[in-house]
Image (tube, rainbow over all chains, first blue to last red; front, side, top):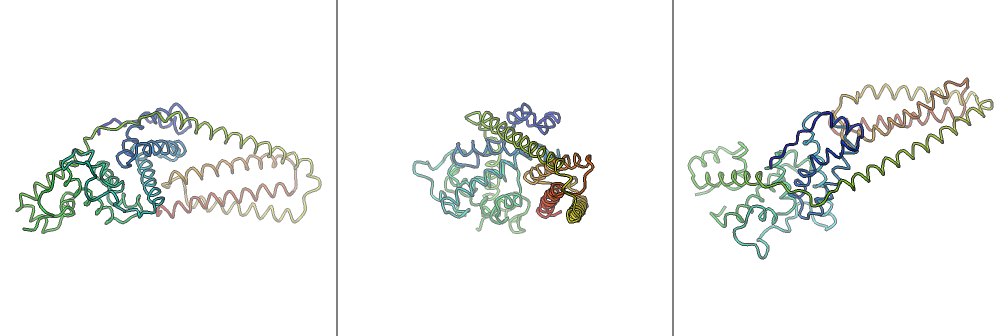
Length: 179
Length: 193
């Protein structure tokens, strides 16, 4: 995904002062990447929409704390990722599951052919696995950063990534050599 | 022949593979193909088209922002009116105040306030990394302290001795300063600075 996320400093300064038009401009600049991040992690589109909304409310509340160190997208992305992970955790708690429960993993769901495309393969992963794959392989977070945000260990993040790729490989390429 | 498992392939991708894994990769075309497939899979993930939100959420966010600001303004207007009433009370009842006990309490509150100011400077919050939540809490407290200072400045203009209202204002200031110090100390402990 390649989107220009450069934001003029003057716009950030106006947003920090509470200018609603500047805040809207920031929303317009980042709504798609934030929604995309949330949607790639979360199973339900409406959950991703809620994360989008929660993320920008947090941005509005906290923009004064952004000190211009690093790209603004990195700051907003971290808020969005935290909100999405919080939602996974909350949903798991509600369902009385453990955080790393892989309830949806294992055999492909009924109706899923042996070879499927990448997006559909990703959709069969648990939200936790999807979150790790997307944050590590696409967004470039380290296992240390992911484990910190998830409140888990580095080895948890690594094992989730390995399990997810094993499953993706199986779904995308069919059963190959035994591993 | 034993092949690399996915953990080993991911480690090799991250240049963290074992000696065995690296040597095996040199010798095994199957594992090299698996590693290539892993790279391709990740490249395909990165190339997935962005998904745009199906609905515009800005109107909801905007209304919440405006609503919060309105509530904040109303709160400050109410506080301003309360402060004006307090000030009027101080002016009216000043002749009946000014006991030695109040003078002691006032002095104590001023000393506590000064020592908290010193403590805050020691943490040098302006040069520290701060979380959004901590920054928001600190900004709110700083606003409230500024309001108390404004009221104190008005009282200082009047030739008054110690009285309960003045003491209470200084004690409020001490409480707010203590909360502000706590916010910064907690943040410093959290980020390990």
